[in-house]
Each structure stands twice: as structure tokens, then as C-alpha cells.
Length: 94
Image (tube, rainbow, N blue to C red; front, side, top):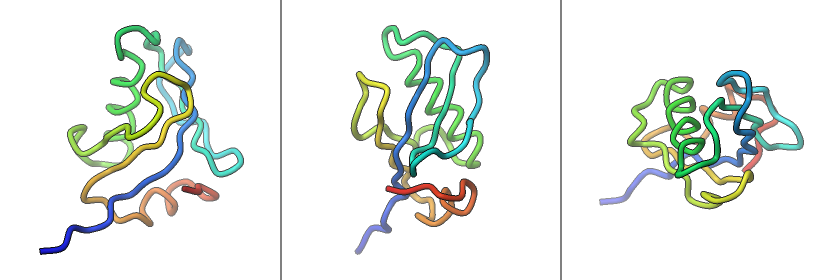
């Protein structure tokens, strides 16, 4: 049984913003701001919830595969067509 290829894309996260929002794509990277501080994974959790809500998937399907301790992250979403994030945010790269 083969597994579908998950959607993957890069994110640059800014914690301690004035709200949770997706700012758009710059140089192929999705720019996201969250109000949570980068303490004990709070900003990462907020990022996962925001992306899940925005893309209409459960938070359990969104995973940070690289960059948990930095601002630059690689996100993977199981069960989502890899083209879906690129259709939503034009210019999004891998």
C-alpha cells in the first residue's frame, strides 16, 4: 500500500506579533506571525493551529519536520494535496 505524498513548504515564523496571521509569500517562503512567545513550543503550537485552520485540516495532520527551535521551518501536512498550499499562496516553493 503506497502513501500519498504530503504537502511540504517552508515557513518563516515571527512570534510575539500583535495577532495570528499569514502575511503572504516572500522568496518562496510563507511568512506567518503568531502572538505566542517562542517559549516551550507555544509559538510552534500556534503556528500549527493557524495553518490547520487556514487549510481546513486537523492540527494533528500538520507537522514541523525541520526548524522547531528556529524561525525558519519546514512544514508537512499529511493527507493534503501538495498543490493545495501553492494554489492558496501563489509563489510558495518547497
